[in-house]
Length: 423
Image (cartoon, rainbow, N blue to C red; front, side, top):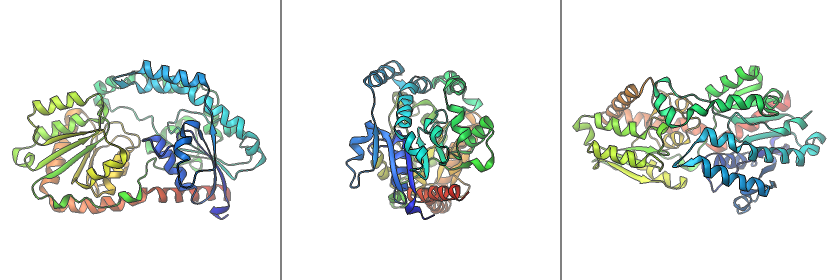
């Protein structure tokens, strides 16, 4: 079957080109897939304004939100956000808002799906593996695809204090939901294919729902825009080697660990470095104090929060990317850095450890905070001293990142559609 003749219903609750994180991912998947097939998009009405600004507005059904849901959303934001978001509680309390969307999608499309109006039904967001998709009930003869779903990665044993700071004690709510949320298990058990965004999530889902290998595939969650594929321009910097961190300044992202690693370098290596920290968050004041305590003010710069599209200039001015986040599901910043030719130093727990290879950087097992800090310092020192190694890893990073260009990921999804339909 030729791709152009496929009719696909994409259910993407969060699909917005003007936002970041999952809504932007949802939009990029949608934009890539619709280049190949006839797409009908089911998305939340909050995305309508941004999507209708596009040069080619989508064929979309915008699912409305009740006044009660709007009030409830404001309510949970007020009680959950206290300087930083309590994510486990936020996701648990947010479920009724998603369920309203889920129910209304089913009511709107169930007859069309049952009639066979679509060749494929594909639900992409939310990407956490904890939500049901009621539309699967109507997919009696129409293949249903879920994902990529990603998440569930635990905190490393040596970082329990960080886990406490991130309210990990509430993570039991995930397992609780598996038994209480109607249709949750059926969504996975009836899906013709589940796309898992990381190896950890693939193994988790396969174990929970006893899925055969034929019904679940590894399909990394994140992608990158094609224009990111350009080597760093930092080779022009003769005086300093530019180290970069990009991410929210919250405990588990471990920007403090990068600063601590700088403090452990000998003076000759430290004097050759300049660290830029791009991002904002609840830990910023602590991090700034840490820099003062270590007397690193001359070599550490806080750029603050910037728009995603503006981060490109920071990648292109850098030489090394350091992101030792200890619990990262997607980690798009690592792919963006690799696309710009940066060797990457990451913690090997979650999705980011699967992006980085021995040819493109270093992935360090987070055995403990002390071990991770010491290893980050060692790898920074090695890359500072070995220009040839930096150059080789830079080239390999860009090559590796090409696999994750959104257009290439969309092509792979079309191949999955065809494979399922042929069966």
